[in-house]
Image 1 (tube, rainbow, N blue to C red):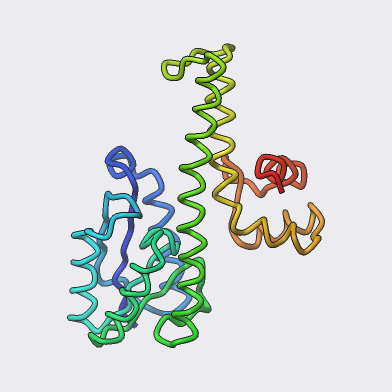
Image 2: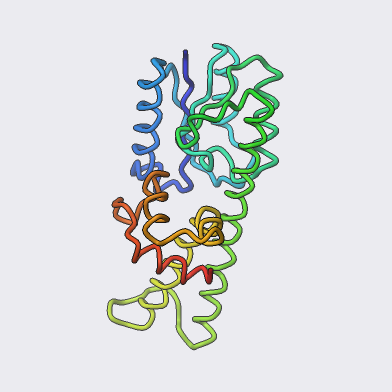
Length: 225
């Protein structure tokens, strides 16, 4: 099997520094090794996941059509935080004879089948929801801080500004997990069980270590679940 790797980072700074890029590359290489596949080309996009106009994605798809190869992506949200865009891409793949898509975070989902496309669409809808809620919660947190007279920007250590900025960042990070944690809370799972499930799904803390039950409890509290 031949793979066309597609990576995406959201900012030019991330693209220049490789922040997040090396992790994506490592996941794709691991997938290739597990499948006995070869990565024959790599394309890196520096663009927001909400934008449909992506030259490097178009180039990756063209290369995949030429080789009848599979496009490999580290995480579903690296290719799209837009359910409609993802569905269009999977349909285009089927219509143009390319091998389809493989996602390292969803290795068992076959995007070439109707059932697989349905699963991907649902997952993309969750990613789209998370992206919108992150934006909304961040704006709400910043607006609340401003209403209390906190001047944002240029924060210094040990000041209320730093505390408010840290709180807004923690809220935004918690929102990234809402789509995963909310169903677990609704089903009555314990904090330990949720922490174990998140670890198996590859969701980690800011420093890359597995989340503890205490950290999960804080996240649940920030989400108001």
